Length: 203
Image (cartoon, rainbow, N blue to C red; front, side, top):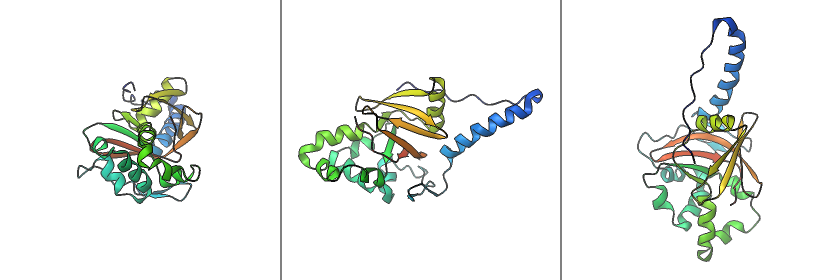
């Protein structure tokens, strides 16, 4: 994934102050959605503690393991043998499915993926949710807007995800055309950042 530069500051000129204030208000509404770290409830009534940051040096795995909404993800990461990798220096950007996201998969999918003989498939699915480098929400939004509304992301697995906007929401589209919405962004970790998503994406 190409590194995304930081967004330039917004300047308001006196001669067009009302027009610029309207534009600024729209931008801030998007940025606020992705940068708030107070406790929040998603549309599926999933409570995620957004105050848990990396002040004590917690890695991506440690933060996810400390949140019950990522228990299925952590079980999968352990079964795939990816704990050491996601505890390494990185940095990584992880699009982390919450438990309800895994619950949307066909019945029996998770137990099957967790079997030893399916470790390679499980690893491919999980690494499809990981990107090398640390990309906060503002970087992603800027890249989408700079690329005519769609930005292609290369994952650690090697497959592609396409990021786009639907209103104020960032949407990820996988290679099969399935979509997932970022429901919580910018959970900071010592070795990267987590963005929680509501649907598992597939390579």
